[in-house]
Length: 243
Image (tube, rainbow, N blue to C red; front, side, top):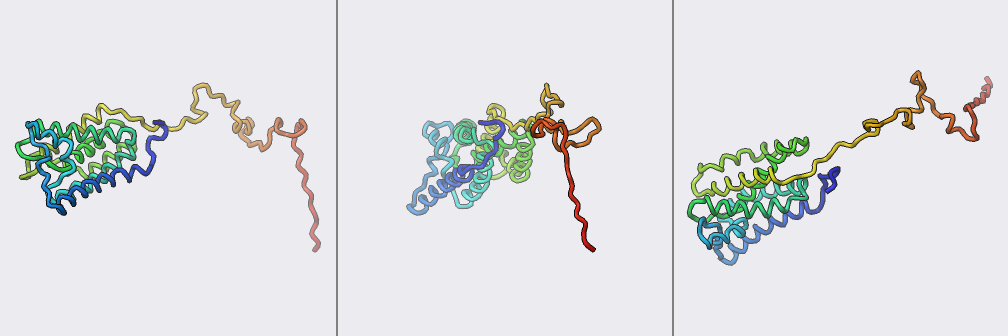
């Protein structure tokens, strides 16, 4: 990635997040339309069959309300991820699904853990901490925007609500923090101007050569005159106006 252009809009910034959200909505529609019940494909901690939920659980939701509450932050945060962290976006998403799912499988309470909230917490945590660690003004501003929009989500890494996978939320938060530490990103560097160069010589600057010792501007230098003339002669013709 060119460090001078780390933030660039592309079709994937919108396309990939929308496609992912449409996929999980399609899965939910198929469940309702054909009467399927895929909750048993979720993460079931510390069982061999429960490991399949590491891959499948982000696409399965228990209710329309559950799906809606995950879809909006997933769409917003993944768009921000693909815009500001495009080279590592897929790593954060794919590894985030796997790592947060495995962590939930290890620490989770007995029962099926489903939903994309673990990935949402990975994205929120990653962009929150990565922006603060980078000390880059745009990424820091993104961190503050994440805090403003989704800071209240931090409460749900604790068991404050019944039938909610707080273990999945906590796993996502920790995984996002670890990713912010280990994933490196190029930061935009400000342009270097000619006068900031270490061996800059003002006498060789074409623009500054147009000023004399008193600071007066010289429109045309002698070496710029045609035919080797040493001076520029300007003639004015005046015509008297008849009264």
